[in-house]
Length: 140
Image 1 (cartoon, one colour):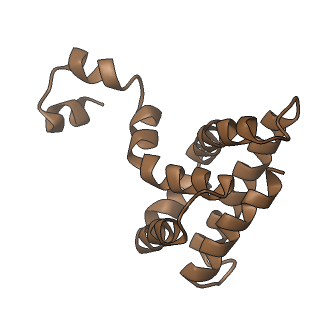
Image 2 (cartoon, rainbow, N blue to C red; image 1 turned 60 degrees about the horizontal axis):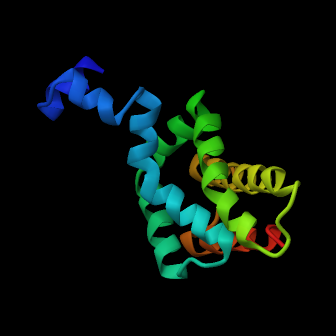
């Protein structure tokens, strides 16, 4: 954290006003990708937007493999579930099971991405984009 504060050129107190931990920094950096995944799961994302993020992930797959395959993977997955939750709550089928559905959708998306980025499941960016968007069916 000290290195990040030094590189940011701000005081520790200013830095910690915005980020409480390394995980907060990671989630902030991953926000555009997680936003694409959560809106894909809602059925409201433009396909081109999701595909751009999938290409971005593929170009940085070595980093993605480390993040999703380490202890931070579940942290990312839980954050994604929190981002998906409001989309489910707005759906006509919202209810007690909405949290478990959000958790399941996030788990499905992260599992597919982990398999794709590791090379375990080979497919094109178009195919993985379609699978991320297909997760919208799990809301209803």
